[in-house]
Image 1 (cartoon, rainbow, N blue to C red):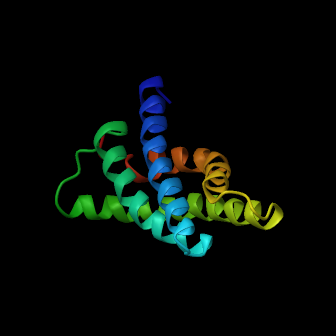
Image 2 (cartoon, one colour):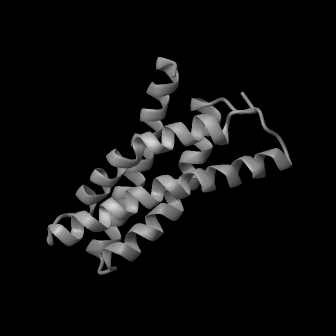
Length: 129
């Protein structure tokens, strides 16, 4: 993994984390259950990080239908990462009631980061660089 790719991955991940944690915390504060708030936050963060990773981190050149296939692979790769992330998020909330949802998002995100990086680099954007 090149340092440039890793650095951009961390920057894009930080933006995604900000969207994810901020939306989760805001919706939870507004009265939404934290688990439902997280699902809504992911619906915003996933497409955003796809576009940023596609353009800057992995510099994909896919066009037309290939772009849609690429997004499909991104969603599939995210499935594994988000499964780990969401499970850790829920576990933190269950083991430490009263934890701010944004903190639980952070713990889940840190655990799942490696799964994401490997999946994106080897499965999602591998053909179009």
